[in-house]
Amino acid sequence: MKDKVVLITGASSGIGRALALEMASRGAKLALGARRMEQLDELKSALPNTEVLCVKTDVAIESECQNLINQTVEKFGRLDILINNAGISMRSMFEATDLEVIRRVMDVNFYGTVYCTKFALPHLLASKGSLVGIISIAGYLGLPGRTGYSASKFAVRGFLDTIRIEHLHSGLHVLVAAPGYTASEVRKSALLADGQQQGESPRDEHQMMSAERCAYLITQAIKKRKRSLIMTLIEGKFSVFLSKFFPSLLDKITYSYIAKEPDYPQNRSK
Image (tube, rainbow, N blue to C red; front, side, top):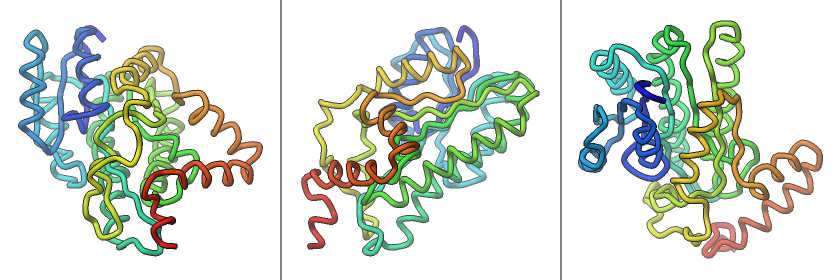
């Protein structure tokens, strides 16, 4: 990663922040996008030996994505790696969910990836660089109480898989990375049925993969130019295996597993 120009969205916390630290440790130059400039500036100050550009960006807004790409290329003259990491989650049964919640999740998770990819693609093709999407195991199997989230992650996977095929002979590298449950702020900021943030996570964050470990695995996959990365053995690889060969069994396991969450939405509706 020495002197590679790496652009990371959603870099103010969680996996995005950990990716910035991991890439910086390997000598990369960073362009960081997020809505919270204060956190970006704090991250920049923690990387005194790294060239860092911070741009306030809401990836749900097309013009802000274009501005992020433009500022990155203006400062560094090139773009080698785009990591579409910005995302939000939701937690409510679909029948009770305001459609604006689904729309917001799709705007950030799916269209944010589409917008950034659209404006970054010419530069990535020129550098024969890497286009990365951070999805989730929810991009391989439907998670109850998270219809919008799973739909957005399925959509990102399909979008990036298609981009890969379109540019099969151009030298472009496309990676779809699927973490399992990872300790981050994503559950605290998850949207409820009415659009309000959930607040406290329903899960024990200490039992999850760390954001730092996740960032390391993603960086290694980029280095090796892998096409896909499924993290965690049981929640990840085994679940994807079941989805291909025993889908009905996986449905039952998934329902039982998610229903054990404290304050699971389906339990509230009974």
